[in-house]
Length: 115
Image 1: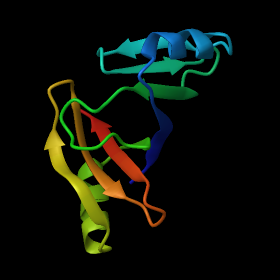
Image 2 (image 1 turned 120 degrees about the vertical axis):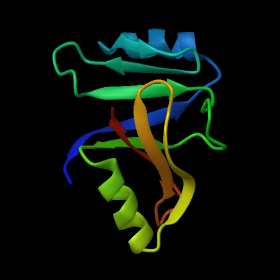
Image 3 (image 1 turned 135 degrees about the vertical axis):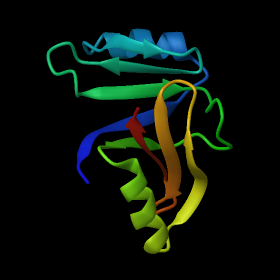
Image 4 (image 1 turned 90 degrees about the vertical axis):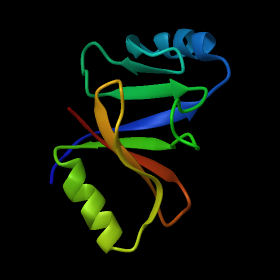
């Protein structure tokens, strides 16, 4: 399994203001679903942050997202390792397969792969 990217997820009730703020640092909007938007550096597209007010389908908003090339293998590894699964593996309508797991410090990690 290979990690493709890691993205911090910032919870905010001020999505537009946050977009403008991070725009001052050179970030541009590359995805917006209304409840979550991703901003990226035009010069380095893998440098990203996501800003969300909540998660559309999950009971908790994750603190970070880790995209992997094999989300099923990641899920199996976490289950076998005894990690707390916060949101079970599933396919989402916007084209990702994902699950949430809690890390040892209590942070919720969204582990995903694009379909």
